[in-house]
View 1 (tube, rainbow, N blue to C red):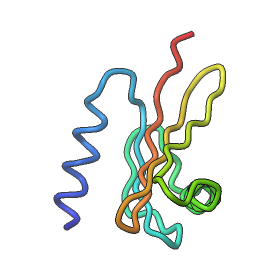
View 2 (spheres, helix red, strand yellow):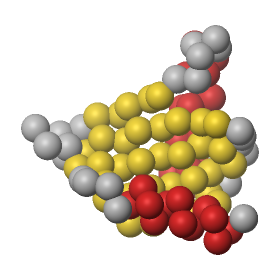
View 3 (spheres, rainbow, N blue to C red):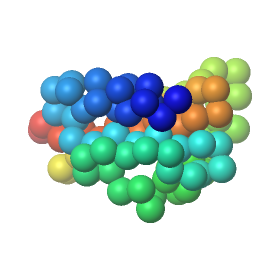
Length: 90
């Protein structure tokens, strides 16, 4: 599984403007991270995603955190949360 996970993260990292990617389990444990993704934030990112899923329980939401320099996109599926960090081109 670890080999497949790293392949997926490598594929995401190859997309334009992506600077980091992180995958965490439902308990907030960082399973893997690449680039600018900070593994110490995995618990907070999973908690944020869990709150979003309580607000929108009928659909799996995508959470977007936006700052002047970057965007962080969050999505959960199958007990895993994926965070993608991109340069913000404004």
